[in-house]
Length: 124
Image (tube, rainbow, N blue to C red):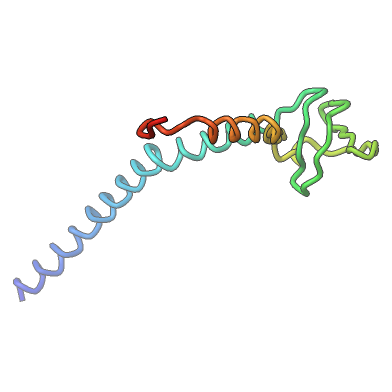
């Protein structure tokens, strides 16, 4: 009888310690990994949404235009066809910086020049 009582009491005392260890581990994981990563992602999103007048921007719906006006409540974009649309600032997904245009004529001239040059091992 005494053995059964001590076994029951010792197992009930060990359980809160394990739970406490799990809580401490989860807290450390949250503060050292999850929270900083979340804050960094939030800062990147906010930075990408900062657009000034004259910048090109893309909305979350995929519309690309030039910012012509900005207030606290609205961002006005002018599309390529000249239509001006008002968006709330959170609808701006990112600044739109298209890839620079490739000058194909310069690439062709460079390729022709490379073909005319003899290889290093060839004798003339």
